[in-house]
Structure formats: structure tokens, C-alpha cells
Image 1 (cartoon, rainbow, N blue to C red):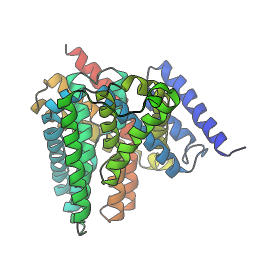
Image 2 (cartoon, rainbow, N blue to C red; image 1 turned 90 degrees about the horizontal axis):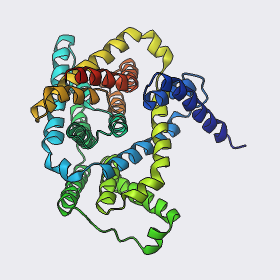
Image 3 (cartoon, one colour; image 1 turned 60 degrees about the vertical axis):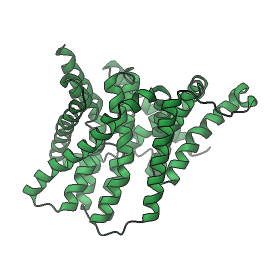
Image 4 (cartoon, rainbow, N blue to C red; image 1 turned 45 degrees about the vertical axis):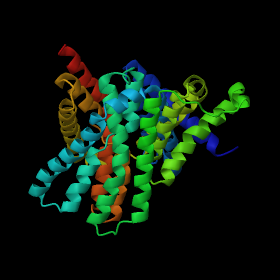
Length: 383
């Protein structure tokens, strides 16, 4: 028997059991996936201990999720309302660094640690936000459109963040890499604008693909991961390329058959992504440092909600919807795992601080759906 079979059975069984329990309490499946990861991960029953492989597989889920969002989000509206993604993300990062600066001045932190922590808390989770917006049918609403735009802009913002952190620790910038990123970013933006203005494009797909359902699956995979590969090779986010692929599919009026054939893959891989997040949660470390981790997570939720609500209000949303949008952007995102690893490798944070950051990020992802639902109910009562 292949040793992967017990692992797959364990993952499916854990998701089914936890999902059944959470369904009785009307909790989103995202929470069930994360709890399943805790249960079967190296800090739970240790059914799965190979986290790197699980994480790599789960990363496909983010790519597929963003690909589907690209097919569903009206690009013309997103480009027209560019102020929220661009100005909103810039303001959010500036406010986050500013808040950490005030705390760092009291704690005596170095400039590089202040900037690093500000970058970490400013990132939101693309997977959590888009999953919730998609499940609630809010992608095409103004607040959903702008929140989605902010998450896409944050993916792009990771690149200059890494450059700034490198400069703060004394690394020399690699101008060839920066040039490649700049060209890739401008090319991606140009393609977005072209499709938004054109409205409809034609994909040069041979007739044998359009008539064969099996070939259609591979064609959809090729387009999705092909563009993700191109943006990855240009040192941009692979998720950005997947989103662009979804936009191209939608503009070519091919979204129906792509969605039909690839939806099961999206469900499986998005689930595995959140399971991999749950596997990171060290229950012993969480127990020993429960007070400080819980306090930091609460502070992150409150500060990020307020900062993002202020940003969304500045770009034109009423306070009621701004607070709701701020709650959706309040968790710390998956790209912060990358930033945390960079901080540890460059000596910006200690090993203890790194594990604390990982615990806070995971806890924010786990509790985010509940926080968003709480704020949503509060906002609804204001009507």
C-alpha cells in the first residue's frame, strides 16, 4: 500500500468530522480546515509530519482560488476604482508602520524591527478574504470589489517590502532582479488595462480542445499555472499571475467550462492550504504563551480593523461598510509567513519572537471568520 493513502484518508476524515461539528454551530469550513490541520499535524496526533510538502501542495489552493476570483470579479470596475487598491494599500502600510513605531519608541526597538513588524501586520490573507467574499456572494459589491483590490495590491507590495528589509540589514539590491520585477509589474498592469478597455478577447484554442472535456481541463490548468509561472519567474507573486489568468479566461467568455471542470480541484487544494496552516500551530507553545499570544492577536484584530476602516472610509465608503471591510482585512496574511522567515534569517527578530509571530498569524487566520461575522452582525444592527 502506498504510504500516502493513510495520510489522504486521515485528512479527509478529519475534515469530515470537524466540518460536521462546526456545521451544527454554523461556522465556516475555513475554521474546520484549520482545526483539522491542528488535529492531524505534528503538534496534534502527528498523522502528518511533513509540513513542507503539505504547505507546497496547499499553495496550489491559493493559486486556484485567486484564479477563480479573476474569472468572477468585474475587471473594468476594479480598474475604474483603482484608488482603493493603490492608495488604500499604501496608506494601510504607512499606518501600520506608524502604529508599531509608537510602540517601538516605548520598547526601545530598532528601526529595522519596527519596519519589519509594521510590514507583517499590514498583510491580509488573500485566501481567507476571497473565500468568505465568494461564499457570501459579496465579490461584486463595492466593498467586496475594493477589499479584493487591496489584497491584490498587497501581493505586489511584498516585493518592495523585501527590498526595504534587505536594505535595512545591509544587503545590496540586485538591480537585475528589481528591473525584472518592474518590467513584470508594468506588463501585468498594462494587460489588465488592455483587457478592461477591450472588454472581450479571443483565445486561440484549437477546436479539438473546445470539443473535448478532458483537453479542456488541461488547457485550463495550463493557462492558470502558465501565467502563474511567468509572474513567478519575474519575481512577482504567482497568485498575481493566476488572477490575471482568470481575468483572461473571463474576457474570452470561457469561464463556464473552466469553472465546471476545475471547481473540484479548487475545493480540494484550498482545503489543503488551510489544513497546512493548522499544522503550524504548536499547541504546547500556544499553551505556554497563551496570555501574550491572545493579547497580541486581539490587538492585531482591533488595530487592523480600525486602520483598514479608516483607509476604506478615506477612499469613499461610508463608515458602516468601512468597518465591515476593515474586519475582513484584519487578519495577518499568508505572505507574513515569508516576511517572518526573512526577519529570523536576518536577525531582525529572535527565535522566540519568530515562533510567537507564527502563532499570532495562525491564530488570526483561525479566528478571522468569527471576528468578521461578529462585526458583520454589529454593522447589520446599525441599519
